[in-house]
Image (tube, rainbow, N blue to C red):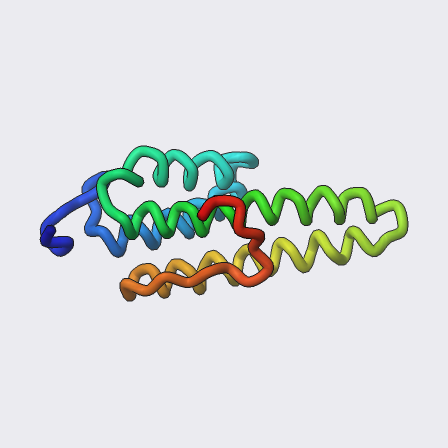
Length: 120
């Protein structure tokens, strides 16, 4: 399989994998889209290339982990610690998505720190 010539949604493989990671940041503009878009991108092409499947699983694992951490922080808002936790989570999500996207564009696989492995 020649990865340089194959395209996914009109993009080369590494670019597509990079956008799987960056697509989670679309929640900044449209709430919820950052959860749905990476899953759709992964699900529609996961069977076409192993790298897409790997990047998608890593991203979905992080999104589920982030959701769980956000719920915990939301509960902890009562004691004011949760607000700080939510701010930290927002910063980590931005930084982790950018790091993962850069790595993906370079053809590398990067697992998000603090991510719980739901999908293997």
